[in-house]
Image (cartoon, rainbow, N blue to C red; front, top):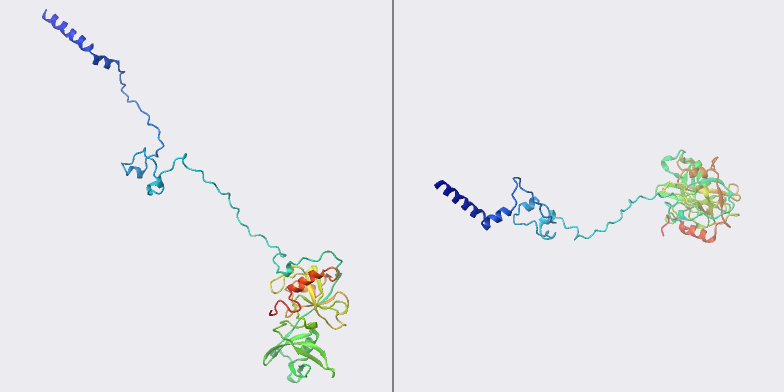
Length: 331
């Protein structure tokens, strides 16, 4: 009986405890599984932790990124895409390529003068002349054979060997070395005693010599012509030599000016021109233009002049060549 009473009391106590409000709430809760449930982190625009963030434990991931001017840690923080303005992109700059300069555009001012329009070119019969230089040490004759070069007052200007004297007379001018230096003489004519006379050229005005009517000789741009047909100062154009290189590194324009003449038995007729090269020997084989001046086979030239070349164009050519002086003359 005692055991039966104890069992009934224990069952009553269990019933009372299980029926209490607190036990009812606990029974209503779902049972937890043995594996812990993984909770998702709330998404945030804050940057991921970096070494600089980890070194500062007070910095919260929810804080706004620091402005670039606040400190060096701002270099590690990227601004939010929604707050940045799009940076305008500049178009790519094309690489500058040096333009190819044609021989025509690389010429000096006069070389850019356009050729005369149209016309019927006439053939040129060409020869070439220059100003030779004679040094004392190169004399090949005896002192008694030297010929004196005199002026109109019979004053001696220098002495030359017979062949050099004839060469100076044929070219019309020459440079003679004397004890006082070089002197440039030009052929003047004959006096009343039929003696050949010369005159000294003012090289400060005309460095290369003097032609007719006190016009200075312009190397590679001067022609001697028959003045009965071609007047002094007349401009002619020869297309075959346009753009050809010259000894000074420039290129020829194709334009020439009549500044000189010669004996009628040598320089006679239309288109008979003698081209002046100053101190460059006519037998020089370096420059192609000299082949035209020498009139070699296959190097023919044709010219146009008055009637084709307008007065305005002729005036421009003369201005650019500093006629009646030369571009080398002091202004």
